[in-house]
Structure formats: C-alpha cells, structure tokens
Length: 212
Image (cartoon, rainbow, N blue to C red; front, top):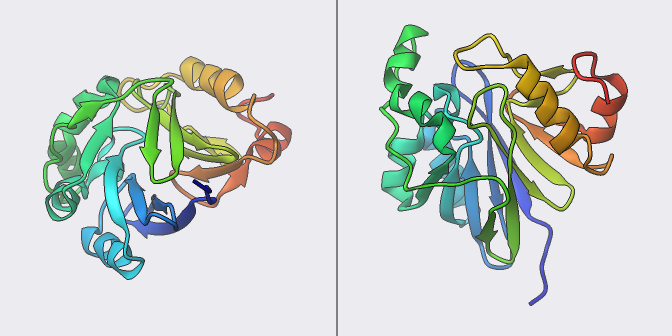
C-alpha cells in the first residue's frame, strides 16, 4: 500500500502555551494526538474537522501541561493512552501539580499501556518510532517518523527543556540530545513541546546549551 507523509496540525493549548500535535495518515484517516495538555474542546473540534480516527493519545512526558486533556479526550475518542512508565509519578500527580500552578485540570487516567525505547506505533500506513530521551523527566519520549521528530520538552529552538523540576537531570538531557537526537539527519524537523519548530541541523549549529 502506498504510504503518504503524515499530516500535522498544531494547537497551542493551556496557560503554559504547550504545543499539542494531531498527526494522521491522510489515506486511512487514522491518527494520534501527541501531548494534549489542555483545551480538549479545541482538540476535539480539530479532530472532527479533519475527520480523523484517533487511535492513540501519546505523551512525550507526564507533566500536567502535556497530559491535562487526556481524560476528556480518552472518553470522547475511545483512544488508548500511551506513556513511559518512568513518568507515571507525574501523571498520578497531575491534578495536584496543576493546582500548585493555579491551574485546574481533570486528573489524567493511568496509561492503558507503557511504551519504551525502540517500539514502533502503527498509525495508518506509517509507524512512529519511540525514542527514550530522559532528562527533562525520567520517562521523556520522542516520536520519530522519517525526518519528523516530536520531541516534547527535550530540545527547543535555541534551548532545551528545564532540568530544575523534580527528577530532572542536565546530564541526562545532554546525553539524550547528543546521542539520540543529534545523530538524526540535519533536515529532520523538530516539533517542540513549546515554541516554534526547528531542525536538528539548526540546533547542532546554534544551540548554546548542548553542543554537537
């Protein structure tokens, strides 16, 4: 069967301006929602607009601003929620963590399944490869298809994810970026967890936090 490049729609959600990505195969109309941090209604409207059958809800990590809308989406879409077991601590604490920031979310559910490095998630006619990229959090994940990387809060345009939060590690995030992300082709698009998209090549040249 002929494969097509996945379509990507970005929604900036919640008070912390998190990037939520809806990624789908235009041929089969099967897709995923990556990091639904808030604004479930907007996400659902977008899914309906493009007539997408959401198969999975994927979390690059368990911080509340990336999983805050999982509960209502899972109810409405009957999609499986997948995350890394290393961040279950954050998912379990989601509602309380958000409240500490003065934000209200519905408590995220336990993931239907934990996923780990090297797994491939089939979505229509393409697969997303799971890459474990800890540092911002222990269970940080990136999702890769060809030259499209959904990296969560690991690598930003000109910056990296914060490591001063609970269970963060600058050494780990540096290692993740150098050994797992900077080895990708320079023209790989990095769909970031916050802020504008970038490329691996741009970050290898200009990112002052982690040098290639």
